[in-house]
Length: 132
Image (cartoon, rainbow, N blue to C red; front, side):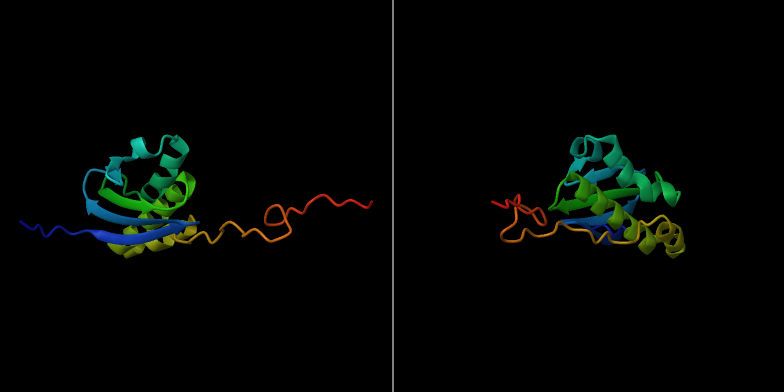
């Protein structure tokens, strides 16, 4: 049995996290890796980050989001989901692009952790200098 249900698909990225987002017209449920959003992200601030594209575009409660997210930490995953949701909303309605872009939700945040260099303790922290 196959159902021809329309959906809007997009990929969002942040640091090393990748979120594949599928928006289906529905009542506003967000399912992340097969679990409800509250179960995956305990923090209210992360849930607000995920729901921000829906609030900005005034589509809260109009789409169900099914998300598969891998890599990164919980903060990067929340950012990746928000990016993916924004892109999927633009797939659904092109007129939302300017509104989402103005809020900075369409831009992929390019900041990633800098690699550690040899002779240093971290990416830039050097060992303490001793004169004698």
